[in-house]
Length: 147
Ligand SMILES: CC(C)(COP(=O)(O)OP(=O)(O)OC[C@H]1O[C@@H](n2cnc3c(N)ncnc32)[C@H](O)[C@@H]1OP(=O)(O)O)[C@@H](O)C(=O)NCCC(=O)NCCS
Image (cartoon, protein in one colour):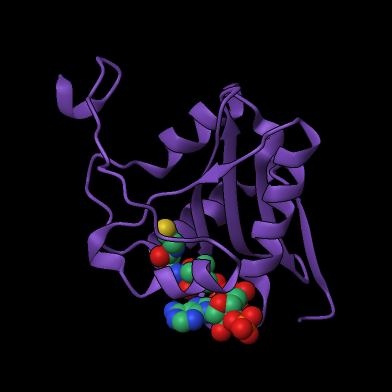
């Protein structure tokens, strides 16, 4: 693991760096996924579960989570290409898990796009299993696609 790696909560000054990282790490993100909107919404709900990985002042990774009283969910797990396979993703996930355990969350879920199957191995290494579930969703009025 990198010696000067720091995992810490998101601060307002991180916005530009996070947007740049997500554009690099999620190049196929659909146009309605606007990074600035994600950040703004997360800052209103459990913002303490939004983590940044920083190496010598540079933002190199993110992970955000939420707990709804039943399950925890993790989103936006990303590490800058140049810094991958050095344990940063794992460190971010461990920090997220610790944050959720601290508030009594008993189980953590996550979704992986079918087109991003290779990342499944990353989560398996961290103890996650593929579960037999059908993933469903519905757009609510706040979603840009429903307008
Ligand atoms: C997935 C991602 C966050 C992993 O970050 P990372 O910093 O490279 O991961 P780590 O170095 O902490 O890897 C932890 C373990 O997973 C393994 N691993 C990581 N990426 C892997 C991959 N693509 N395929 C197989 N194994 C992988 C590592 O070898 C390591 O295994 P070990 O503990 O046995 O040595 C990074 O590849 C990424 O940002 N991908 C693009 C964005 C993305 O798809 N995010 C997930 C959305 S669901």
